[in-house]
Amino acid sequence: MPRPCSTKRRALFALLQIFRGGTVIVTSDSSPANVFEMIDQTQATWTFMVPTMWASMVSSEEIDRFDLGSLRLLLSGGSPLLTNTKDAILRRFRRLASTNSMAPLKSAW
Image (cartoon, rainbow, N blue to C red; front, side):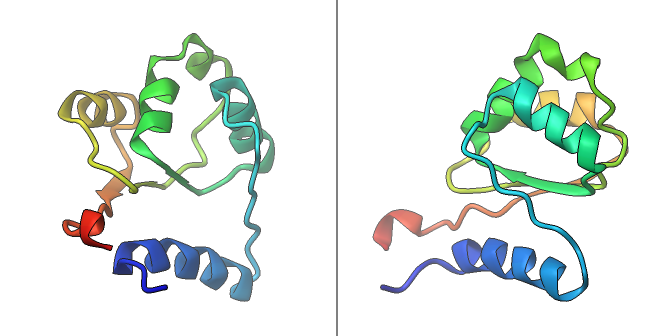
Protein backbone atom coordinates (compact mmCIF):
# COMPACT_ATOMS: atom_id res chain seq x y z
CA MET A 1 0.00 0.00 0.00
CA PRO A 2 1.51 3.38 -0.93
CA ARG A 3 2.34 5.69 1.93
CA PRO A 4 3.04 9.42 1.95
CA CYS A 5 6.68 10.33 1.53
CA SER A 6 6.81 11.69 5.07
CA THR A 7 5.90 8.27 6.53
CA LYS A 8 8.69 6.57 4.60
CA ARG A 9 11.10 9.37 5.45
CA ARG A 10 10.90 8.71 9.20
CA ALA A 11 11.53 4.98 8.72
CA LEU A 12 14.43 5.71 6.38
CA PHE A 13 15.87 8.20 8.86
CA ALA A 14 15.85 5.53 11.58
CA LEU A 15 17.35 2.93 9.23
CA LEU A 16 20.15 5.30 8.25
CA GLN A 17 20.99 5.74 11.93
CA ILE A 18 21.49 1.99 12.23
CA PHE A 19 23.67 1.88 9.10
CA ARG A 20 25.84 4.63 10.57
CA GLY A 21 26.31 2.70 13.82
CA GLY A 22 23.61 4.51 15.77
CA THR A 23 20.99 3.06 18.05
CA VAL A 24 17.24 3.27 17.48
CA ILE A 25 15.05 2.93 20.55
CA VAL A 26 11.37 2.02 20.28
CA THR A 27 9.12 1.85 23.31
CA SER A 28 5.53 0.88 23.97
CA ASP A 29 5.43 3.17 27.01
CA SER A 30 5.17 6.71 25.68
CA SER A 31 4.53 8.33 29.06
CA PRO A 32 6.57 11.51 29.53
CA ALA A 33 8.52 10.10 32.49
CA ASN A 34 9.54 6.98 30.52
CA VAL A 35 10.48 8.88 27.36
CA PHE A 36 12.47 11.50 29.30
CA GLU A 37 14.25 8.79 31.28
CA MET A 38 15.18 6.93 28.08
CA ILE A 39 16.52 10.12 26.48
CA ASP A 40 18.51 10.92 29.62
CA GLN A 41 19.93 7.41 30.07
CA THR A 42 20.84 6.82 26.42
CA GLN A 43 21.85 10.40 25.60
CA ALA A 44 19.62 10.27 22.51
CA THR A 45 20.39 12.96 19.94
CA TRP A 46 17.04 13.02 18.09
CA THR A 47 13.48 11.97 18.64
CA PHE A 48 10.31 11.58 16.61
CA MET A 49 6.89 12.00 18.21
CA VAL A 50 3.40 12.64 16.94
CA PRO A 51 1.89 16.01 17.96
CA THR A 52 -0.25 14.46 20.70
CA MET A 53 2.89 13.05 22.31
CA TRP A 54 4.66 16.41 22.00
CA ALA A 55 1.74 18.16 23.70
CA SER A 56 1.94 15.65 26.55
CA MET A 57 5.72 15.98 26.84
CA VAL A 58 5.94 19.78 26.99
CA SER A 59 3.09 20.06 29.48
CA SER A 60 4.50 17.38 31.79
CA GLU A 61 5.94 18.35 35.15
CA GLU A 62 8.47 15.54 34.64
CA ILE A 63 10.35 17.46 31.93
CA ASP A 64 12.68 19.25 34.35
CA ARG A 65 13.65 16.07 36.25
CA PHE A 66 15.77 14.72 33.41
CA ASP A 67 18.77 15.86 31.37
CA LEU A 68 17.53 16.27 27.79
CA GLY A 69 20.59 18.25 26.71
CA SER A 70 21.79 15.53 24.32
CA LEU A 71 18.85 16.19 21.94
CA ARG A 72 19.82 17.99 18.74
CA LEU A 73 16.85 17.31 16.46
CA LEU A 74 13.13 17.08 17.18
CA LEU A 75 10.79 15.58 14.59
CA SER A 76 7.02 15.75 14.54
CA GLY A 77 4.64 14.17 12.07
CA GLY A 78 1.53 12.14 11.49
CA SER A 79 -0.86 15.04 11.96
CA PRO A 80 -0.67 18.84 12.12
CA LEU A 81 1.38 20.27 14.94
CA LEU A 82 -0.77 22.88 16.69
CA THR A 83 0.77 26.32 16.98
CA ASN A 84 0.55 26.38 20.78
CA THR A 85 2.31 22.99 20.98
CA LYS A 86 5.02 24.11 18.56
CA ASP A 87 5.51 27.32 20.54
CA ALA A 88 5.84 25.30 23.77
CA ILE A 89 8.41 23.01 22.13
CA LEU A 90 10.41 25.96 20.84
CA ARG A 91 10.35 27.63 24.28
CA ARG A 92 11.53 24.45 26.00
CA PHE A 93 14.12 23.41 23.41
CA ARG A 94 15.37 26.78 22.15
CA ARG A 95 18.66 25.59 20.68
CA LEU A 96 17.29 22.72 18.62
CA ALA A 97 16.29 22.23 15.02
CA SER A 98 12.72 21.06 14.50
CA THR A 99 10.51 20.02 11.62
CA ASN A 100 6.93 18.92 11.14
CA SER A 101 6.80 16.30 8.40
CA MET A 102 3.03 15.92 8.11
CA ALA A 103 2.11 15.23 4.49
CA PRO A 104 -0.40 17.79 3.16
CA LEU A 105 -2.43 15.13 1.36
CA LYS A 106 -2.21 12.43 3.98
CA SER A 107 -5.99 12.01 4.13
CA ALA A 108 -5.97 11.07 0.43
CA TRP A 109 -3.88 7.98 1.12
